[in-house]
Amino acid sequence: MYLVTDKVDQRYSRIIGVDNGGNSYYNALAVQVQRRLSHGFQGSLAYTWSHAIDDNMGSAGSNLFLGNNPPSSLFNGDYKNNRGDSSLDQRQRLVINWMWAPTLTKRTDLASRVLINNWQLATITSISTGQPLTESLSVSSPLTAAQVTALGLPSNLAFTSTLNGFGGSSQVPFLGINTLRLPNAYKVDARISKIIPAGERFKATLNFEVFNLTNTIAYTGLTSRGYTASGLNISPAAGLGTPTASSGFPDGTNARRAQVSVRLDF
Image: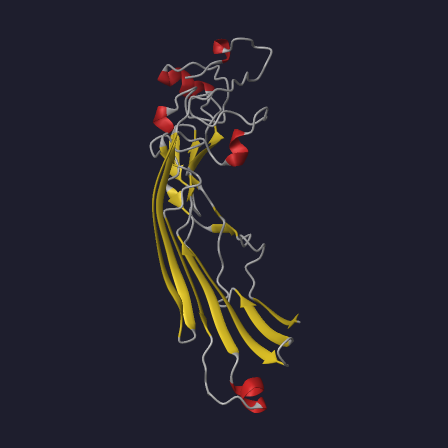
């Protein structure tokens, strides 16, 4: 229990110390397969398996110097017991891209060059597993004075927002960090192009591109509150794991978009 009387200087709510007590670990395996251009087709496949572990250091924004956030550990300075999957841990990622430029006829007349040949179809597909989130416990009603007396507990907790009075991490004490996962993300971008040659030194390329072809939502936030504490009762909270945000990284939107463009080479 963290009490008001334990504070070094009771004039201050917190005195935050910055140190390098945490550790991080990263292991990965990367595999890449490529097919060079042959018979109008080329492509590549890249797969990465990785596992990032740390002592609950959070994301980049959680570790800025001179920040005003409270400590993120469950107990003061207890880094080792906060060890688990990193907030940036992405276990698997697969990227497949290919381009097909078929030769539909060997004729070189104007109609063959402008209408039949010089088409290209290309796609980029990315599939990745979701990053983790820490399941939280919120204290809706602290222990009453009668309950504190009956349990023989001190009544002057330093902070009432957590069960132990520390006011640091709101994680569920018996679960650890980053036990939730965002849903997997899938994304397909496609492009069809028509090259129109007009002599040896000039050509035009017409492009029709579609981003997020399957119109798939990539969720970036979930309801992470797993439990609520009211007095002596700890109860499961409703809505755990419900998607709450979909910012559409890295494009800024999840919407399917299409565009038409013309490129001139001379």
